[in-house]
Length: 247
Figure 1 (cartoon, one colour):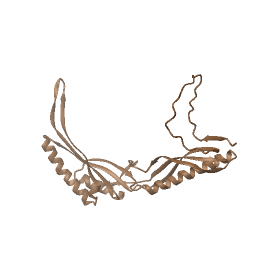
Figure 2 (cartoon, rainbow, N blue to C red):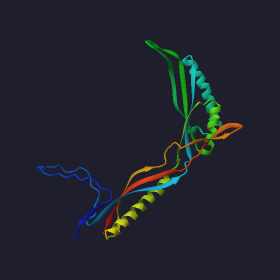
Figure 3 (tube, rainbow, N blue to C red):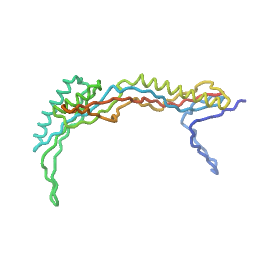
């Protein structure tokens, strides 16, 4: 009768009980993965990878205003933000890609020794989250926003808008790598790969938002510096565990 053996690429800790008195143990409630009645099981973990050029940039652009009163700070902030918002729309950014991120009003204090803090004014902040679907134009739009009163910029965060096709490429790569490793182990053991028993996807990175390494400015002697953004490339990865049957 053929015996069943288990091979595993990753070593798992073994729970060993010794010198423990026998006792009644309730039946486990978890369902173990299906294991063939005969053969040798080999578990392989592999990461599949592909690359894409990011096609979506998300930037936070805001206006910070100071005022002697809360009303004055809010009024100045609203006027400047209206100009910033108009500039964004003139640049061709769709309404669905513009979202208010934060609105804040905070008192400003003067602190002295042995005296209570004194309010000296108020600071109003209004920030927009803006998505650019043409990264090449985002630097130019940023310069326009600053010219219209934006004095707080955060980003850009670069991502892939529709990563499904890239994820499928990474999945294919992961399974191919797992199969190649299985063939290697089977050959080393004097066996062959009969079939795949199961495939489990353990996680995926679809090239989500990530701040670029550099936000460069091209300097010109006779002109205002212009902001340029280099999209670079993003890795799209998928991790899988594949169980093979060897014989």
